[in-house]
Structures are given as structure tokens and as C-alpha cells.
Image (cartoon, rainbow, N blue to C red; front, side, top):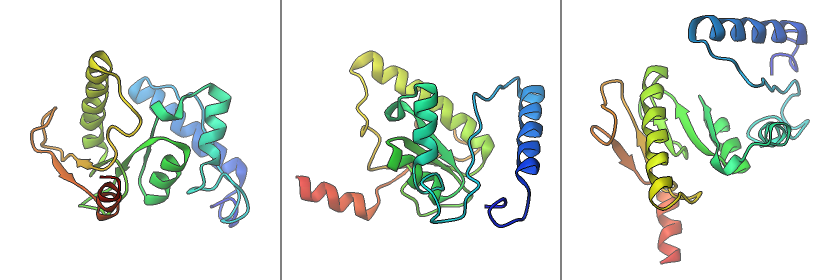
Length: 170
């Protein structure tokens, strides 16, 4: 919202993105496919999170299957935007946040091991029986920096809202 509020110019935002891309390439040999951003203030468009407009635009632009995609963010608006677009979600936030995210990680270091676990688990499931979109919904998994790959040290929680939904279906 920095551009919408006049805190920075569009040129400054684009310079920040160029610097981030250069850093990611230099330090991690990582090239970003695209960077999408919203320059509007809340209520002015369909692209400002938690609305899914940017994710839908990215999917159309790059031929992405949002049901097989992940939204990773640092606040609940990111999680909501991902779910509205049909993605699964990971919230990166310290502590034990109250969230609708499918997974949480307290920091970026933990996110790396979580992603490895999630990707390996997905490969195993596809090889055995395929994964439906809702396979992970209804429980949230959280990883801490000391957790090992796999299930050791995992905490699971079911939100009351989802638990209530399940009870109605049964």
C-alpha cells in the first residue's frame, strides 16, 4: 500500500524488486518467474489481498494450476487470498498464530524444511493414490527449527470452525 498511500513511488517499488531479484540470484541462484504487486488502496480493486486477483492473474499469465499451488505469506490476508484462489497455504509467523493456513512455520529457516517435507509427502501420495485438493485441509501443521524431516516434532491442530464443518457432514 506504499504506492497508494504516497509513501513510495512506483519506480522505487520496482527498484526494490530489482534489488531483491539480484540478491536472490546472487545468493541462492534463484530466478523469479514474475513479481506481481498492487498499487491500489483497500477497496479500489480486485488485486489487493485478501482478494485473489493477483493470484488469478498469475495463473492465467503463466498457465498455473492453483489447486496444485501454494500461497506462502506472513499474514492472514495472504492465507485468505490463497484459499480464495484455490491454493493451499503456509503462514510464516513466529509463535503459535491463530490461522486458517494449512501449515505454519515460525521463520524462513523452518520454512525450508517444511517445504521439503510437503513436497516429498506430495510425491509419495501422487505415487500411491493421487492427492485431492482437500487432502491437507482441516489440520494445520507447524514446524520449528529443530524439527526433523517427516513427522517427528510435528504439532497438529484442528480449528473449531473446520471441526464444526466436519461434524455437519458426518
